[in-house]
Image 1 (cartoon, rainbow, N blue to C red):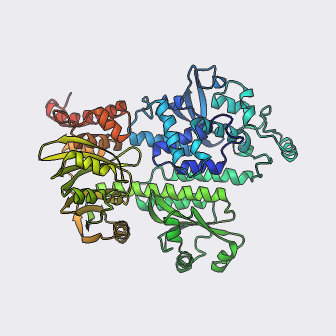
Image 2: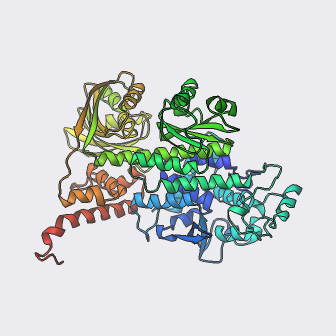
Image 3: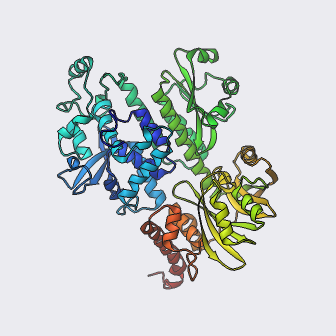
Length: 609
C-alpha cells in the first residue's frame, strides 16, 4: 500500500481485521502504536517503558507518551523540528504497553522492543501477509500512521493542530491529504456546535464531547455518544482485568465492567449455563432458556471454529425469553488462541458491526486473561490432574519422523517462542541427524529445525513448531507437558492440568486432532513441594516470565555446556528476539540466581553486608 496506490485510507473494520491477524502481544502492540498512537517504526525502536506517563484531567486519567524523534525519515515532509513530542495513548494501549514491559522484564530506561526499526516494519508486513484480503496484504507501517491521522481528524474530530503535534507532522498542510471533504449537513452541524472539526478549527477541546463523524460520501454518521461509549467500554474492561488473580475475579470483573454499558451480561459455559451475570437484565433469562437458544443454534461450534465473530438474535427472539423492548442478544466466544472457554452473551440496544467487533475483542481479552490466570494457578497449586495419552497418528510430526526413520524420540522440554511458536528440544536415538532434519523439513507443523549437539549415540535437536502437534495442543489448553516419548512408532505423553480444568474438553480436543489417540490414565497428583531454598524461590517468584523462558531455553539448548551446544545468536534467532535482548534477559536472570546462591553464605554473621 505504497503512496498513491490507494485512493482511500484503512477503514475501522479493515484496521480491526489487521489487528485480529496478530498472533503475539508484541505484534498487536506494534500495530496499535502505529495505527492508534501514530508512531513511526524508528520511534518505536527507541521507545522505553518510562516514556509513558499519566495525567489526570476533568476527573479522568489520561496517558501521554514522550516520543523521541529522528533527524530524518523516509518522507521528508514528516520531519519535525522538535527532538521530542508528546503523543496521546488510549488507555487500552497504555495497559498493553505496561503489561508487555512487565512480561518481557524490560526496565523503565531500556528499549521496549529491543529490535531495529526495520524489524518492526517487517513485523507489520508479516501481520498483513496473514490476512485473506488483497488490500490489507500490502499494508505498511506508514499506512497505519495514515489511518491514525485520518481517524483522528475525521472520525474523532480532533483539531488538526493537535493531530499535527501528537503525530509529529511538520506542518498543517501535511495533513490536508487526510481530511475528508465535509458535506453541507456536516458543515451546518459543526458550526451549530461551535466547533468546525476542520483543520483550521479547533475551538472544541479534544475529548469525549468533541468526537463526531462528518457525513461524507464515504462515511455514514455515527452516534457520538455510542462511539464514545464503546471506546470507554474497551478502556473499562482493560482496567478491570489489570489486577485480577483468580478465575472468579476475572469473570466477576469482566461482567461488572461490561454491565456499565449493556443491559445484561452473562459469562456462560459452552452449553449456555451462566457462570457469572450482571446488569439490569441479568435475571430476565432463566439458565435453561438461555441454554436452549445456544443449543438450538449450535452456537458453540460456530463460534469455536471461527465461522462467526458474533451471533446476533433479533429483538423478537429476546421477547420470547423475557419481557422487554428493543434489546438484541449478541453472543461471542471467550477464546485464547484456538481454545474456547465459554461464551459471552450480551443484551444490547445496538448490535451494529462496531459493537460486535468490540464484543468479539472483549471475548478474546477475557479468554487470554483466564488462560494466564489458570497457568499461574497450575504453577502454584498443590494438586493437579495428570492425563496420559497414547497416539500413533502420523499427523504428529514426532510420530511421523520416528516411524519413517525407525528411531526413538524423547522430548526434553518446550519453551514458548516470541511469535506464538513452541520450541521443542528433542533427543534422537537410532537415526542420523541429517535424515531427521531432512524429514521434518517437509512437515507443515515445523517452521525451523537445527542440531544442538551430536553426542554420537544420540543427538539433541531443536524444532520450532507452529502448527498442530502434541505438545502445543496440550500447552494451549493450560497443560504442562511432563514427558513425551516416541518408541516403536507410538507416542506416549503425560501432561498436568489445574484441578479446575474441564478434562473432558481437553480429551475431546486431543482425540479430535489425532484420530487414533486414546486416554490411558487420569489421576490426581501432588505438585512438587516447593522447598525453602532461596534459589527456587527466585525462580518461582523473582524471575520475570521472559527471564525464566530465556534461561530455560539456554539450559535446554546446551548454552551453558562447554563447548556450547548453542550460541546466543542461534538461540535468539530461534526465539525470534534480538541477541542483545536475549543477553539482557539472560544476564538479569543469572544475576538474580547467583545472588540467591551466594548472598546468604557470604553475609557476615551479624547480618551486615
